[in-house]
Amino acid sequence: MPDPRVLKFVIYLAIIYISFFVTGILAIPGKISSINLSQFLLTLSFFFIVNLTLIWVFFKVVIRNPKKAILSTFSLIASKFLVYLVFILVYHLITKNITLEYLIVFFVLYLAFTFYTLYVLIQTLKQNHYNYF
Image (cartoon, rainbow, N blue to C red; front, side):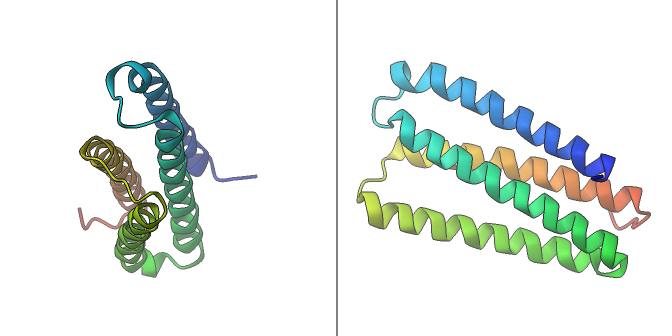
């Protein structure tokens, strides 16, 4: 059975995903004409999968070796940033068309999911009595 803390954070992540999904479906067809819905949903799903993987790996590391929790936090945040850079580079190479509106949407999603990820990591470190924050 999964850890209840992990399940709680995954449910919150799914709520964030669904919120952006509904907002994208309502806003993109009428308001942002340079982004099509499939681009947005691809990017949103990628963000969800990356953050879900990050939370899963983080809890695996913390449960197995609590002494490496801080090191794993920093390394996971750095690797997440690199994965997003590779995504935007590959996306640019494939589509050859990144508009300003797409970049704004990308960074809004990046900031929202990063803030949530930091919240999860900091709350977990506080609960495990790593009072570094």
